[in-house]
Length: 115
Length: 288
Image 1 (cartoon, rainbow over the protein chains, first blue to last red):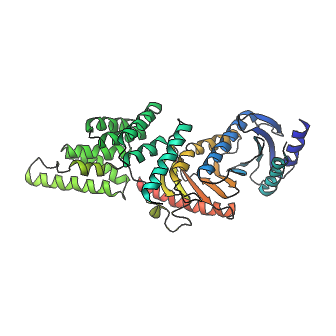
Image 2 (image 1 turned 180 degrees about the vertical axis):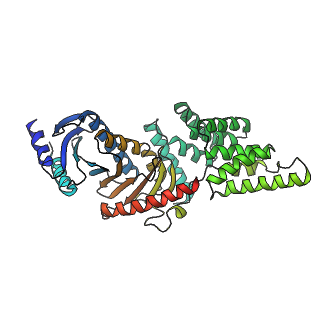
Image 3 (image 1 turned 90 degrees about the vertical axis):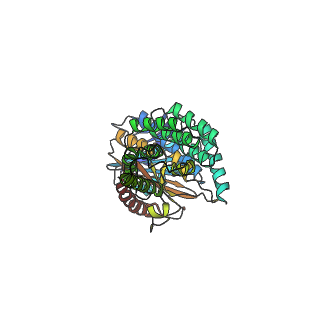
């Protein structure tokens, strides 16, 4: 579990990131979460995994390879997601002024390194 | 790729999609594609299976009605369109279908009311406009020469006119925009393509399949954003090693998808998507 926490901390240190979590892609369950105060991670994990799965199927239907980075932008915040090779989804929730580029790099790093 | 080959491939892909996800709304474009190919038995099976799962879908009743119309079962077709209108009083396909049936039956005033509704919502639909013009001509003749006009339309003409509610002409919907004919898709929340087009890197037409996969994605994005207290969702982007997808919602009932090669920055996609969404909104407004 310490490895999970360390991995997520590298993401939550990025400016604008409010919280991060690891989600099982296949069943949408929370594997680990960090700094998710005030947010119920369980439904968020389920919906984010569902969205990621849908986008994977969509890109495949479009003849493209599965997504490596997903960005949901909303009026007062942002959700970022990066699928990893081991059936996990690295998710970050951020403020509208989040440094998306840096958060993306950290998330890709976590996903590529494996948990 | 020849049109017939592309159609066959499209049917194969949609059939596989439906088999893997029986709850998918892809039965609608699949049933329609089968109907257009004259595979009425298969189209009927698809429509009935879809109706079994979605008995309150006006589109499903519309599809089944068109199949019944092609089979010459006009009374049953009428019933299905009637149900569609009860479920969705503004359903254009049902107005159009019932309008034609009233026309064939010689009930010109009723035909006029339905076809005017359909033609108003579909100003670019030649079928609806032509049928409306015929009804008006017939009414004028009846006024001049007494009752009885209005039965001129034969079965073949009816079959032509029973074509589905037209998908917007892609070249007209996004004309002048980057990727007007390929890489821009407008669809409704049920995953039915309203306009635009999309081909895979191999050149296959994947517009309908991709649209079907996106059914409900807008609601899912909306739920996720709200659950997190992030307000309304604005855009959804997916980076893939060989292409980017960018989705926005021009209206609460529609989704616009932009697909570009990997080299195009996501920021650029946002600009193009915003522009295309404005065009789509204007186009949708024009249909109302």
